[in-house]
Amino acid sequence: MTILQFLEQAELGALDTCKECPWSPKRNTSIGFGVSCIEHGLDWTKESLANSMLIAQDPGDTTPHTTGRLCTVHNSKNQTDKTAQQNLELWKTAVSLNAENPEASGYLKKHYWLNSIMHGASASTGLRDKAIMETARKNCSKVLEAQIRMLRPKVVIATGTQPTNSLYDIGLISQKWSNIRHDFSSGAYMEQNSSWFDDKSISVYCTYHTSAKVVNQTLSQSYNFDIEKRIKNKIGANKLETQDSIIGFLSKYHDMSNATHRGMRYLLNHWLDIGVGIRTAYKDAT
Image 1 (cartoon, rainbow, N blue to C red):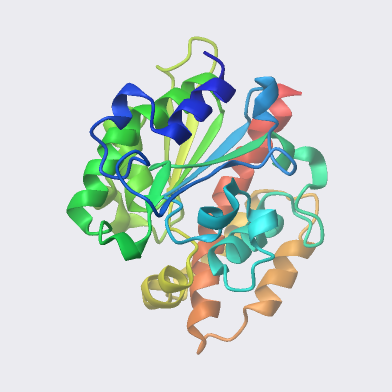
Image 2: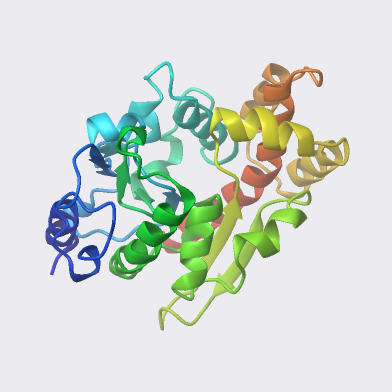
């Protein structure tokens, strides 16, 4: 089965693992589904291999619930989608190193977006409590695993609790979110997995989601001035070809009395690690 056929079956809720899923479209209406954008990201319809892969939670009540497309470039145009806007800004700053063009150097064209739970129930269904979501996540972990095995990424980025726990469940990493979330001040959590593929390893990074709630509440409260030292040290140690995008980012988010500014600087400390991983994997393949 090709990945195109696989995703067509997943969208219909026709895979074996979908049968018991409480968020299956065969059980409920108001169920969203999204697939990775082939215009800005990897053209997975041609069965290409990914360099990097970013895993979010689910598409329920998000921009992809309406558009069916997982893409930070397209979705950032929705003025209410802070998750996509802030994710795109971090990508441009720390990965492409180009504040104007997220596709600079070609990294985005080898990138793939997906969710740990491929379908997402709308809040109007009453199906978004923690227990039901956890059941949906566990049922969908095999769908996540299949996509990773088909696309063979070199770098996987898990954003938040659900994606991290799904990677733990399928054996790609050795720690659950609850075990790593208290040690994020130094940077993104990273594990190297050499057991999934015979010819290469996978670098797995775990970080926070880029939603407004996470940035403005969780991360703004976790911010401390040691993060500034880490950012400065990473900029120097990484020997970046250009620092313009980072300088611009730090200039924009300069007000330490502002919750969004603190939260975004916290995330930059993580994304500087992720950016090195993505660029290194990409260059090693070319």
